[in-house]
Length: 144
Image 1 (spheres, one colour):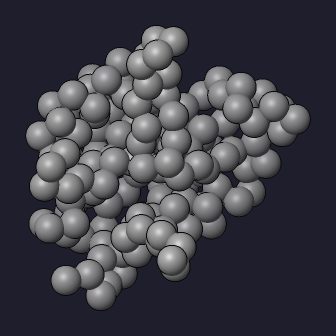
Image 2 (cartoon, rainbow, N blue to C red):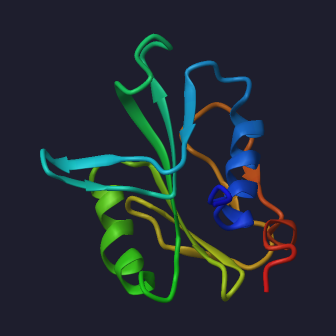
């Protein structure tokens, strides 16, 4: 059986984030990620970006910069109504909901109004770097 590759847009977003964060040695990207709510209750974003206190213990995350969820018809309402607000309440600084059918990315931050991007979303986790700009035409290239 061939390996499962997942949707190309998820990998394009993760790759763009990796290029953007390359100069930051204690930044990590995992796909999928994990944010723990309680001992047996956790959320798993499709992509999680976080910063650690040391490279020796990358899973001891102390700053969760970004959680990315790719919506599907079966999870769209759950992602919008529950997961986004839950990530922000748990201390994730920014949440992106990717809507492949609509070719949009919705960004959310605690205490801010959601923004729906149809062209070039700009995200800025709380780090001293210029904002990341994603070209959604490229992200969704070749997706039916």
